[in-house]
Length: 173
Image (cartoon, rainbow, N blue to C red; front, side, top):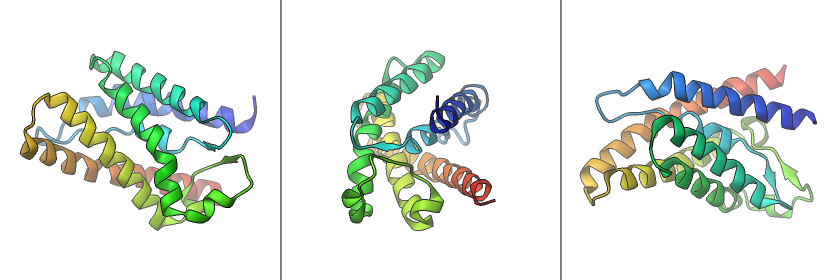
């Protein structure tokens, strides 16, 4: 196993552990539930040659969260969705990325900058939360869904950006 595989395996275990044992027990004001495990999917390398591997990893991550939350595949669906849309979103934010000759591209705040990192993370978290809360509500209650989505996106995005900032500071040394 190479260094990248080990690093992402440790991230996977860490974020699943944090989500299941700490953040699943947090519910602010009845609306805000941070989902930090999304950072694992956000930080997965962009593999131009094997996009299906990323989808399978996202599916596995979502199924593990579903098993602990007893949420019947909702997280699996939303994880696969954000894994599917993350490449087009990043290519739209950074058009010159398509022309890079690298097969595997690592996403980091150091590599792409703070602005791209904030926009990219917030967009993926918004898509995840909107779809998850819509499926969870199982009715078209737009007010409640938007309130939960916006409140959770703000808290989750701030937490994920802080984690990314701390990670970029550690890699600068």
